[in-house]
Each structure stands twice: as structure tokens, then as C-alpha cells.
Length: 109
Length: 144
Ligand SMILES: Nc1ncnc2c1ncn2[C@@H]1O[C@H](COP(=O)(O)OP(=O)(O)OP(=O)(O)O)[C@@H](O)[C@H]1O
Ligand SMILES: [Mg+2]
Image (cartoon, rainbow over all chains, first blue to last red; front, side, top):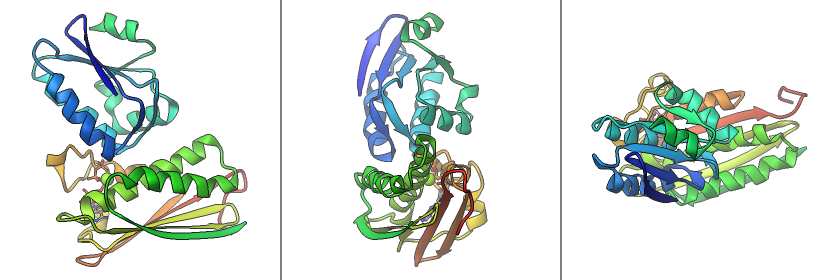
């Protein structure tokens, strides 16, 4: 995974491979260390994420609650079908927006 | 076709991906669609993660993973010898989690149920839990 600080107070978080309980534990800490009032928006680039389960939902929800304190926004870019289905089941789609590119996601911030 | 496997591993989080990989390779023998296989893989991930995070609160214990193929149907069973579940009906309710402080969403059982044809849960307090996922592949649905 990689985190970069970009324009519009936004953290760009690219998660590759599989997001399960094992990987979520590490990723959570890295993102939390990067969140601040200057970096309160998150774009998750899921274009190279091949698998996610409910532990991924817990990780995303937890970060969402954190940025909400700073009035931040969250967008998810290009989830594959398996990941999208988990997002749909979780109800996360009601609070997080989906986009097809990072540029489009940045425009929303 | 008929086939079986039976294994055990230590309940550490590294083994979640191991359990998914083994299940995928086993079920792939039935030539499922990409979607069917990813559903089963997700359901196994939920059952195995539960055994790892909920069953053994103090130190990692043994998790059992076994599979059976009978015709077009695959049965995957995940067992632990951990704390057990006191109220299975409640545990299976969508959004119920025994560990809200750990960023759990309480969706594991709901995902297992929606991604499999059916699931069976047996548990005894202090003895452990056994979850069986049942899924038939292809147009010839139904168990033989
Ligand atoms: N193997 C198990 N041993 C003991 N308790 C379990 C086991 N599996 C599930 N449970 C209990 O059932 C509850 C519901 O499980 P479920 O997988 O639906 O949600 P969760 O694990 O809490 O959250 P999520 O799966 O979304 O991360 C758990 O919180 C736990 O209390
Ligand atoms: Mg669970």
C-alpha cells in the first residue's frame, strides 16, 4: 500500500492485493498516522485491490469516523466486482462516494 | 466428483490468506465461475477470521479447515476449540458484533449467508465452534 499527500487536503491511499483482518491491522495504523486537520479527506484507490472482506469494511468505517471529526470526505476509486459487492452489502455506499478515476475523485473534494 | 481434504493451522492472521488460497484451489476442481469462486473465498475468509479473532482471546489456538466435494457441491468446514458462541441466533444477526471496540462491523455471518447456499453453525461454550459453508456450482444446483 502507499499513502501520498496531495492537493485539497487529501490523502491518496492506494491499497493493492488483499484487504483482510491481517493486512487491515497494519494499514489502519499507517492511515491514522497521516490523518490530520490538514489532511482530512481520503481517496482510496482500489483499482489494484483483488480481495476484501468484512475486516476491510471495519477499517474503512473506522477511518471514516476519524475524518468526520474534521469534516473530511471519503471517496473510493475503481473497486473490482468482489470488492464492490462487499461495499454494497455493508451499506457503506450510502456514506462514501464511488468514482472511476482519481482525478474525478479529487474534483469532489 | 468426490474429494476431501482436512488440515489444521495455528490461528494467526497470516493464515487467513492461506485458508483462502487452499479453499480456492480445492473448489476450482469443480470449474466454478470467477464469481462463484470469489463468493466461496470471501465466506471462508469470514469464518476463518472469526475463529482467529473471536475464539481465542488470550493466545492463538488451532483452527481446523476441511473440505468435501460431492457432485457439484462443496462443503467447507472451519472449526476451533475456543470460547464458543452463547447465542448463535444473535451472533448471526446482521450488524451484531461482540467486539464493537475493535472496528468490527458485524457483517461476517451475513456475508457467509449471502455468498453460500446455506451455512450451518454449531457451538458449545468453552468447547468451540464449527461453521460449515455449503455451495453448489454451475447450472445443476442442488446437493447430490
Ligand atoms: N468462532 C467463533 N468463536 C466465538 N465467537 C464467535 C465466533 N464466530 C463468531 N463469533 C461471535 O459472533 C459475532 C458475530 O460474528 P460476525 O462475523 O457476524 O461479526 P464480527 O466478526 O463481529 O464482525 P466482522 O465479521 O464484520 O468483522 C462475533 O462478534 C462474535 O461475538
Ligand atoms: Mg467476523
